[in-house]
Amino acid sequence: MITLVIGGCRSGKSRFALDAADQIKTDQIKTDPIKADQVKGGRKIFLATSVPRDPEMDKRVATHQAERGQDWQTIEEPMMIHETIEQASKTADVILVDCLTLWTSNLMFAEYDEPEIMNAINLLITALKQCPCPVFLVSNEVGYGIVPDNSLARQFRDMAGLVNQKIAAMADRVILTVAGIDLLIKPSEKVNPIKKL
Image (tube, rainbow, N blue to C red; front, side, top):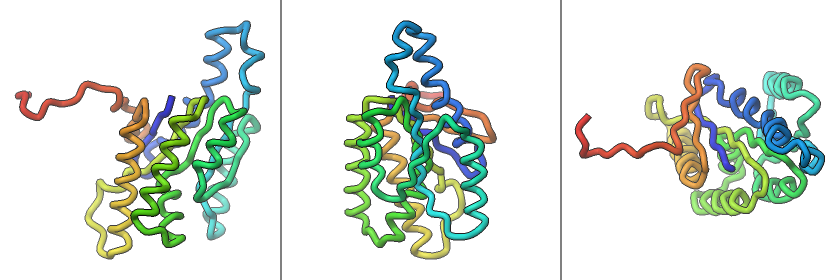
């Protein structure tokens, strides 16, 4: 099960993803307590794409690590997340990737062009499709604001939007978070644009 959790800054998306991922082992045990010992070991993998570049970001990372608790193993990987997912999924019960927006900015910072970023997305999608454990991916919705006033910011907004579209298209579920409220937007009934409301 692949779940994309998307929302704006401080919308509650990371908290929702963490809470939902924390339930994975609990739900497996409730479903089949006899096989509880056969669950891969309770390994919860937090795949962090953040690259702290200042003291404020260092503090944020430390705070988030403390909030996750001892149950989570953190793997820091800013770019090659498909490889990390392929490796970690062999023994993990759940993987949480936080976040795709920072991953996109890391690729751009490394001077990946659009075809290279599209290739990275395709590698990620392949890894997700082959993943035997549930994966939660967190991403920012950055397209709700005004059009940025510079070329790089517009390019980033557009790439983040493309990443979100590609992952949402292949995900089993897409959750939109707004003001701490989670809304299931996939699966859902498609809106018929011709049908009168």
